[in-house]
Length: 281
Image (tube, rainbow, N blue to C red; front, side):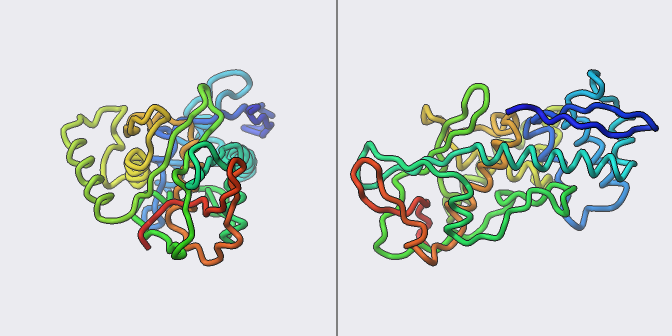
C-alpha cells in the first residue's frame, strides 16, 4: 500500500511528510488510559508517536524537535492525524479472515472486518479517541465470551491473512475462560526474569499496550502451528495488530443474537455455519 504523503506548515515553511506503518512496539505501548491523560504526558506521547509514524520530512529522518513542533501546532497535528487515521483504516480493511467449514476439510469462506461489523450490527470501531490518541485495545483486558445459539455449527477455525512482507498467516483462538487466564498468568511469570532494557521497557503488566500484546501472543498461532511470542507481536506491523485485535473481538466477544444475518455457506460443500469461535457461552 502506498505510503501517505502530505504537506504541512512548520515554522512558517511548507514541509512534505511521508508516513510509514510503524511496528506494534513503537506505538501500542504509548497508549494512555483516560486517567493518565495529563496534558504534559499526552504531548510527550504524541511526540513519540509522530517520530515513529513519520518516515521522512523533506526526505530526511524527522528530528525530535520537528515531532514536538507538529504536536505544538494544532493545524499540523490535525493534518497528520487525519492522514494517519485514513492510512490505518485502509490497512485494517486489507486484512482477511478465513473461516474454515465445520462440515468438510476443504472449504473456507473469506471475510473482512466490514462483514462482521455489518452482520453483528456493531457500532463503528474507533481506533483513536476523538481522532487523536489511540484508544484502549480490546485485548488489553479479559472480556467475556459472546453467546452462541444452540445447535448452530461454528467455524472449525478462524484463520487470517494480512498483506505484509512476507504475508502474515495464522490462526486465532478464543481468549475466554479459566484456562485462558491461567495461561496468561503463566506467561507473565515466564517474563519476570527478562531484563527491562530499551527493547523491553514496556514489558510490564502496568503497560496497557503490552497487556494487549501479551494476550494476542496467547491467542495466535502461525501457519506452521507454532504459538506466537510477545517479541513477534512487538514486531508486527501496527495495522496487523489492530486488525487482529478487532477480529478477535468480533469472533470471540460479541453475542450472536441474529444467526441468520451472520450465517455463511461453504463454497465446497454448501454447508451453512457461523464464522465465529466457540466460547461455551
